[in-house]
Image (cartoon, rainbow, N blue to C red):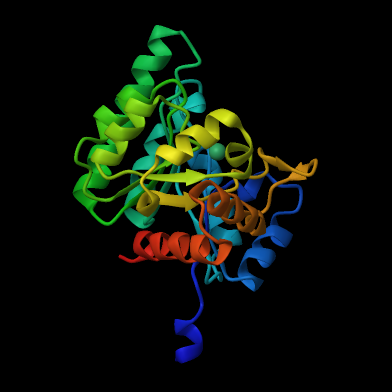
Length: 249
Ligand code: MN
C-alpha cells in the first residue's frame, strides 16, 4: 500500500477526448500514465460514445454536458441531458457564453445553466466543469452556494470576478495556453493556490503545434511553480493535493 500512497494525483480536469482524431490513443495514454481525466462532452447526444469508450477506465471519466454555445441551436436535445445528470458524477462542459449578443440565445443559456446547477445541487456530490467566457458574473451568481464542486475552466474574467468565484468555493482549472499568456498569468497569480487545478482543454489548446494531451498538464504544473516561485516538486504536490480533494467524494 505504501506504493499507492506515494503516487501523487495528476489531473486533466477538462479534456474533449471525443474530439481527437484518435480517441483510443488518448484514453490509453491517460490510463497508462495514471492521469485522472475528466472527459467532457458538448452535447447530450454525444455523451454515450465517450461513456462507452471509457467504461473500463480507472482514470478517465466521462462527463455529461451541453456546451453553452450549442444549447440554443440544439435545444431539441435538452430532454436527454436530465437523466444523465443522475447517472454521472462529472458534469461538463456546461456554463454560459456571452460572445453571442442574441437575446433569446443568452436567455435560454441562463435558463438551462440554472436548471443544471439546481438539479446538481439537489442530487449532491457533483463535479461541474464550467465555461464562463464573457459571462463570469452571471455564472458565479448562478452557482451561489453550490454544494458540490464547481471548476471554472479557462477562467478569463476580471480579478474581482475571480475573487467572487473563489469566495463561493470555485476551483480554477488552468491549461497550457493560459500559463503562456500575460492575461492568463495575471489571473493565475491571483488564484488561491488551494483552488488551482490543471487541464488541457485538448484538442482545442495546442502545444508545439499539436493538440494538447493529458500529459501536457505536467508542463502546466512546471509553469505554476515558476509563477508561485516554488520548486516544481512542491508545485506538483500542491496541485496533487488539490486534485485529490476534488476527486474525493
Ligand atoms: Mn472545452
